Image (cartoon, rainbow, N blue to C red; front, top):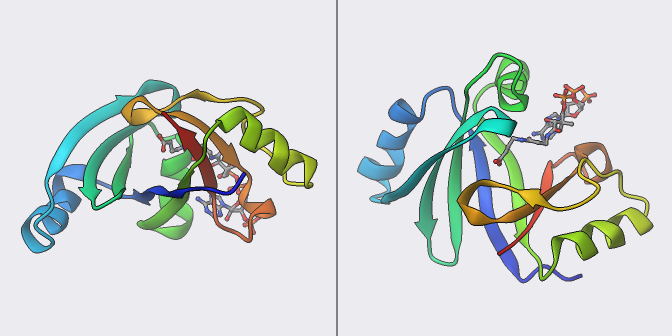
Length: 133
Ligand code: CMX
């Protein structure tokens, strides 16, 4: 299942309105989409950087995974997402190699992607996502 590239890096922030200023005013990047992902209880903001993207993640509820992350670790890199051909196949292969899955099969994520997460306890402490178009 070799990933073809890093699709995006997810970064937990307290406020997209505040944090986007750095990406726009200092790095000169353009936010091309703001999207709420209701089932993940997050608002997202996307910036294209060459072949990859930065995804800012702001929690929309106190019990969101990102709210918990911010409370425990503060703002910063939350996950790395790898582009794969097929999320279901990549998840199955990872599981067959002993990785604990957070998603047994692909589901719809932000920015029109099929996504699936692996547990950070199985991935050298980095929350890992597979995604495909
Ligand atoms: N990166 C690395 N480690 C993480 C982590 C992260 N983002 N989030 C939690 N952990 C670690 C915790 O520090 C903890 O480690 P210790 O036991 O050593 O303290 C361990 O994982 C378990 O954490 P927890 O607090 O008990 O569990 P949570 O209830 O916070 O759940 C996780 C953690 C990863 C299972 C949960 O956040 C999850 O299911 N994430 C996948 C979905 C997601 O993150 N959605 C938001 C983004 C959606 C999007 O991109 O659109």
